Length: 327
Image (cartoon, rainbow, N blue to C red; front, side):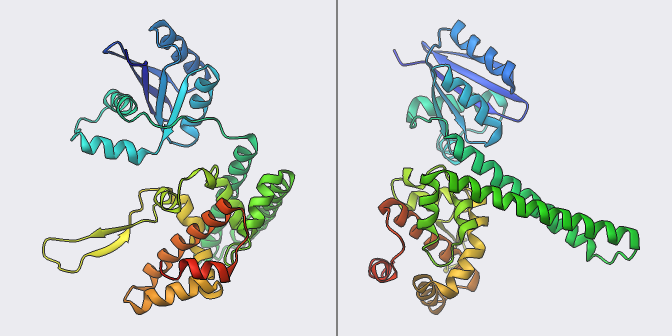
């Protein structure tokens, strides 16, 4: 008899849950809050789904709490990339779209693919991620206010209010940046990883902090290609029925935050990092556009970050040039 399987389709307000047990399936919807999580666990126990293998998509904050609660209750939990579920659905030619159908699909994926088990991240990672997300919100708000200030408004009271709000946001941004660095300094492992990352020209302390706050542990990936795929930085060929020159584009099916984090560092690395500079020169000479070269530089930076963290050695241009000269 197969172990019980629970598939959860997560949304902001609800959890659509399918339990597979003894060749039968059961469906129930619960609220996505502490009370709903307790009822979900009680329902699973009532249906003899004790210790079931629970599978849900990585949806960030909406799924984190239920995943942690079920883990604490003794369930085996897998949190998987939504793209894997989507690929599985495509392979099954699944066309029906409903909350119940999605829950069943996730449960079926878990049964067939037996994804790796998940455990809650350490508090230091959760705190760092929360601070990074807060910084991004503040910076986005500042950009919006700056755009409004430059939109042509001339009313003195409104202009003064914009400037006062921007000044306030600047203060809050500085406070959060300091809180991020203070947190890293308090945790030797994070500080060590940050020191390794900033040894790569193009990656500063804040970028390193953002990478560490976006990826639970880069070292958990088996290889750099996995990490690039996770970030959506793997190339994808696109060809039409009439074109003999297929275009290469980013897949963009991974972590959009990572791509955003790496964009400006890649531009800097293209100028100052000898490996990235030579790499981009070769690509431009081969016919790639400047934007395509920057995308490749983002991927190369991620490969370098993976390499130094996996090897636990700082950036060494002379050593790495030999390794990456043919990549």
